[in-house]
Length: 485
Image (cartoon, rainbow, N blue to C red; front, top):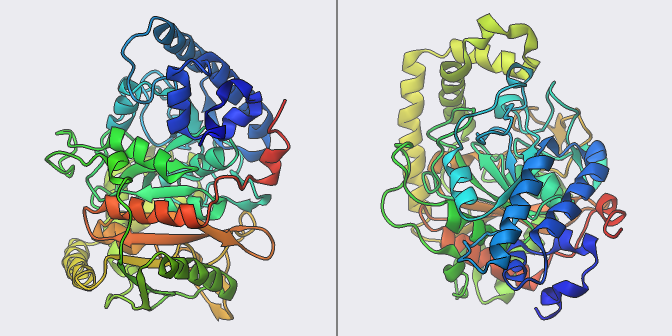
């Protein structure tokens, strides 16, 4: 800890990988200037973003102006909010007042919202400085990050590989030292998949914990916003700021939201933990399965009881698909008439499929959803946590989704990402922690899931794992080249 706090002796590039909670402390102590910090990160973005395409919009003027104002307040010794002067990025699906928000779409290439999304509003109030808007597939409708607005977003561990999606740019920015904190969103794995592929930490809170109001996209029954970071403490820091009820989102949870930073002070003790290598239906690459299992076994050394067990659930995709497709068409169906030629093929096919969903099919899916939630809740009567791989494979080449895993054919839509959707259906909190690397040097993630409403347990378990198997100092080669100036 002491070495982390010697901010005056840090080279500029080292600031890029300093945790956000520590940067906030250093800014208060005048050990680092918000202006210096923002300049350092913008310089890194200018050099690395042409290779990685993490950002669709970089807010150079806005960020520098906010940094100067933040520094003025520090020098005047004003009462400072918790994230004062800390740079962040925001996924380009989420509205940012006065900053272009494209949703990764040519259709919205000139759209500048006149209000912030709720989570952005809270981050600004907490003193955060927005560096820019991170890359996303068009309207968030893919688990990999390609669109027609910008170049494909690349994995920093191997730029020829995908970073996942739909919060792909957010994960790449954090992994590469292009901002210590990123705000993402997750409707079917969109935080956990890219976190797993890029070797960073990402947490999907309980559905409704963070109000969803203010952005493109649909999935009101499944989606939420959440943090991507290099450390668990940073994620708890951001989650504490953005959580809490807001009447603009009827799904948001009423009542007081937990202080997740304080929750990290409690250590895990003798948790009952289930390990499921496949959730009963997934095909998984043998190396990924072995690395994730080794990660699960770490909890045994932490005093927990780990046993192989799988919830008695059906595959989630037949429930998920009709609800999401119909909701996407409800929100964006007019684009089939107004701008069909500007849509990427996957958005066009999604909207056309949504148009075909019948009312009785939607009703059947809602009934199945309630049965699914019940079965998952019954499983967690016997366990505190469930562990799975975050993804079925490591990051694959850009534009080449696997059609076969472990010698068996899989669908290209969900075959590589079978583990995350279930917990969007159930609404439970879930995180992806980095748990190792494949033989070709690509990150593997371990998914940690807790009961509905128990983000604190996910964060505590993640922090214990982080302490036992640290990942923060593992930096992608492309980012190491640009660590110092």
